[in-house]
Image (cartoon, rainbow, N blue to C red; front, side, top):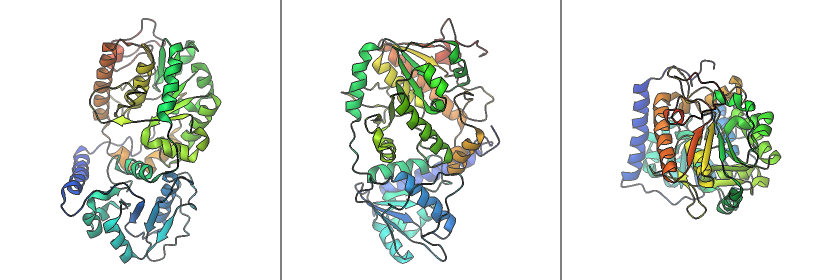
Length: 429
């Protein structure tokens, strides 16, 4: 992978300072006596006033993605522009896809009126992080969401997703009912195969996988038609706020491939609950193919049932959705392509050649959400991931689920459960 904000060396001290700043403002919003969190409502104010065509074009295009046509209901968007910034500007960043914006219920006011509305907005979307320390934002701190992509870590994409989900209307959610249909199909499944995107996935063609087993795939596997035909997938999982539910060219290409895979292979997609409406809003024909899974803030693994619907909130697709769904629907889970991370990695970990997009597309995600990558310490992320994964597998085994890794892995709990007939020769030490 080429040098980028994602692979640059980490300034841990600065990351910690930005984290402290982020959390301090959130705490301030909860305890300041003059500001109270409002019920999630339709009034959204973009703040501060836009002072450049590029900034306005960037935010406008993101709005087009996060607020799909036909789903905005009673949404009321307020913005202001200064100087020579035209509301007819067409400045879509080169790293983003181009989204329809004509449906957005935007009203424009002068900067003074914007300050007044900012103090009382149901949601104050701050696109320039410095403005969160201005008078109107301080006054309404409990309802501020910073969507400045250079602010801190995941704050921007998560905030966009949360606010757009709260404002969306008119989309029926049949997720629990759809999950019940998966449970009924589980009577025919004895084993689940869970396919991750590590380098050893490239060796999957060396083995045949039974069509009568549950096959759970994730993420960029959808880009490879030959691999999809070979894996016989039943369930597609994806959850990343940047790579899957953002406006970058990478995310656009991924969603094109994911939607085609869902249609062509009759898949059920399982995504986080708050992103279901966003996906279905742009693709209404998928309403009966997408399950929005509630994510529970708990430190105890949870396997979803239709009568206890939800999974443990984690930061990795394997532990968030793949293993919980496979463990809930079968009693034998075989893992493929979960290689883990070498000690000398400069990124999250290596990926499969046949199940990954090229660097040019990857860079569009880095450019669209720079803080997400700048502030991510991959060693910390990985350590937390393997701890959660180990706890989840041990929990599953206590419930009678058997686990086996069919490919070599640097992850200790998977290496300990390696199959005797590994698909790929192991060079893991």
